[in-house]
Image (tube, rainbow, N blue to C red; front, side, top):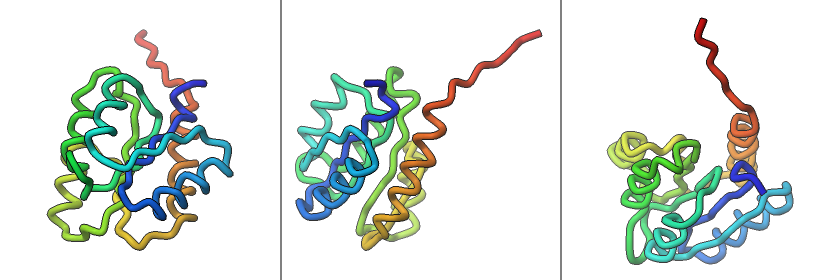
Length: 134
């Protein structure tokens, strides 16, 4: 399966992780679930995903460090990152965007909104962009 349909959910709150994964699987996405930062980093070093749904406050390694590691990996240049976090301070949101996150949803968030964002990103990832040089 292409990376475009592969999503990893990195969220330590089991109920939230399960809800997100269930909703995405229902829409036809291949979903991996991770509950801590150390395991997430290990998986992301060996595998690329089209979309990463990432909490900030994780045991082991925080989401900011994971976001930076993804964006520092040249193989993950087409990976979109969606932050889902209880941290709602403008500085946290700005920092996440500086590190490379594309969206930032504050908990509690609407699952429908998250699914709509994932579908939008998935459409973008499915397209091949080419540049013609005359």
